[in-house]
Image 1 (cartoon, rainbow, N blue to C red):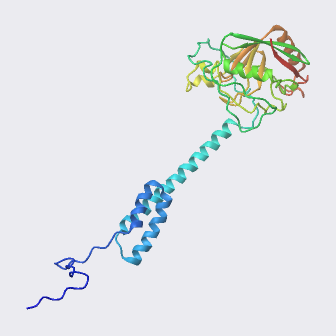
Image 2 (cartoon, rainbow, N blue to C red; image 1 turned 90 degrees about the vertical axis):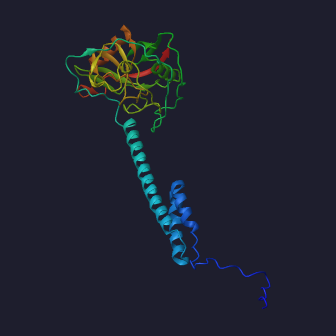
Image 3 (cartoon, rainbow, N blue to C red; image 1 turned 45 degrees about the vertical axis):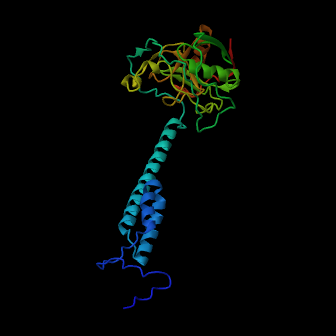
Length: 327
C-alpha cells in the first residue's frame, strides 16, 4: 500500500480539535482599550466603547461585556468630573463675590450693643509679621501703585510716626508696627508712593455707636482700593477663628486708627479715623493712634456734621488729604 503524496508545502496540518470543539473567537481589541481608558481618560473610553460594540456586532468577536463595562464606567467618571468641575466653578465664583463685593467698606452701625467691652490685651502671635501677603483683587486699583513687599516684615521699631496734612488741619499718627506689621507695611508703602495725596474722605459717621471719618479711597466713593487685599491683624488675631466673640462689637477708643473692610481679609487702602469711642466687631484691624492735634482737627470736622443733616454720609466740611508722610 502506497502512502498518499504530501502536499507541495509540507504535511497536512492536524485538525484543530480532535473532539470537534469550535475554534474560540478572538476578543475585540477596542473593548479592552475602552475598559482601560475608562480609568485613564474617560471620554476616550466612551469613544472606544462605541466603536467596539459596532465592530463586535459586525464581526462576532468576543468582548461585548468588556465594551459595556468600559462605556458605563467612562460615562460615570465623565459625568462625575463635569459635576465636580461645575461645583468648583460655582464655589470659586461665590468666594470671589464674597471677597470682592462692590459694596462699600462700611460697618453696620445699627447692630452695636450699648454695653461694650474693650479691645483685648495684645498677646503677640508666634507668626506676627512672618508672612505678609497682598494678593490681587478682581477690581483694579483706584490709583496706580505697586503692592508692598511680601513675606516677613520687621516689627521693630514698635511704632512708626507719620503725619497727615489735610485742608481741615494736620493729623499726627503713630503706626503700631508691633501689633499690625503687615498693615503698617501696606499703609507706609502707599503713603510713600503718594497714593493718599489729593484724596477726599467720603464718609463721616456721628452716631452714638460710631464716630469715624473714613478716608483712603482715591475714587472718593467709599468703594475703591489699591487693587490688592490682605489679612486682618490685631485684634482679630487675639481670637480663635471660630470664636463667636468675633461677631460681638467691642469699643475702639477715641484716637484709634483702624482699617476699613467689607469682610475678614478684605483690607485695602481705606481706614477710619476714630474721633469718638466706637462700636465695631474685632474684625477691624487697629494699626495706630491719632495725636491730640489730629483729634482737634477731627472734632472740627465732626462738629460741622454730615451733609444733609444726617448721621452717616458725606461730611458737610469737605476733607481732602494733601499728603501722608512718614516722619
